[in-house]
Length: 348
Image (cartoon, rainbow, N blue to C red; front, side, top):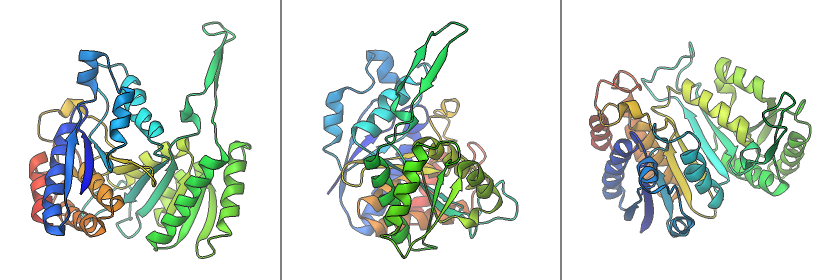
């Protein structure tokens, strides 16, 4: 019995999570596994009523689950950063979800802005370190508000944090078993402390994985090659900030935020799965938002929970559905939100 915490969240989050749960129920019957869900109302509306984002007691509750299924974070009436830091980042850090896993895969029938590239060329995965780097919030202002003001932001990287991310990436590349190539993305020519650590650890660990081909690219070159030759990549591993940037580029070349899913993983603990597109408040309640990213996030959740057969069924069904859709964009799909969910269920 899998215990799943459900956080529908803000904006269109509840709408896409509803379709994801619809697919989860259907695939559980076909694949023969059991699960139970518990819903939590943390998000913008609760914050507006109570001033509470995520109490520490809730963190203890989440540790009792096998996975967290998140809809979206972000409310137009709440100052940016409050929910993102107080809910999303707090969960990632407190539950030590030290891997952000982002598949970049173009499905059949999905438009990509890259000319002459198709599903054969766009199929790679980004492994992003998720607990360190610039996101630790360490820094200071000096002489704030004066002409001599200085702002310092620290990128903190530990050998433990870097190594566990790299080891996950090597193991994932081996398990993925496609090109068996792992690319380290960094900036060794400028960030000579942080990426000296990353590169040394990468090369040392590579000695234990003789079956994996390794290479290195600067982050700016990575952005160029993702657009010009995405087929060069199999798995990319990088730090928190660069991972944040290149995965959004990845989402665009795979067809947009409507199809992009991600996982915040603690391989030894509780992981969290979410669509990448955010809360999209202007589409709330209109039944026009694309639920496929949330459905794909549910598929990723099943894979991590050990239900590989069910995860494969979900992905294959999504691939059949994308071939019938006019667009991945809200309001232009040719189907409503609920109709897309129904189609995925029908094609399982």
